[in-house]
Image (cartoon, rainbow, N blue to C red; front, side):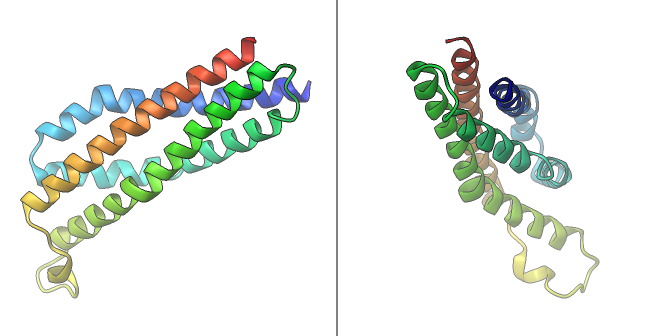
Length: 164
């Protein structure tokens, strides 16, 4: 019974992450790439505030449930598949924390500098030009594509593990 609940948590958490990142990749990212830099910054900062509240929690919950399942699995195949899926969750966390989060912070600082009233303290030191921000946007988009790929693969592995 506990293994079934943990498998459900693992599938649910990873499924939400994979679905959210896939939808973002297919639906939002093309728009991100087309809009001007100030518009992109405003949308990016606004969305990041919402997303950063639940994605790390989902990834951690999925990882913990999967880790516990490794000690309860019925077959060697499901253990191997879950280990591979867990590696995908770890890859998602690493890509997020090492690439996307630092860029998100830079974009937020630049956005706040642009949005700050004239003469506000600290605004000038963090301002970036559009070409630098465009470079950050392109790098962020590439990393996000990799994040989407690894978590979708992880979800597929978890689904297969549930049926072997």
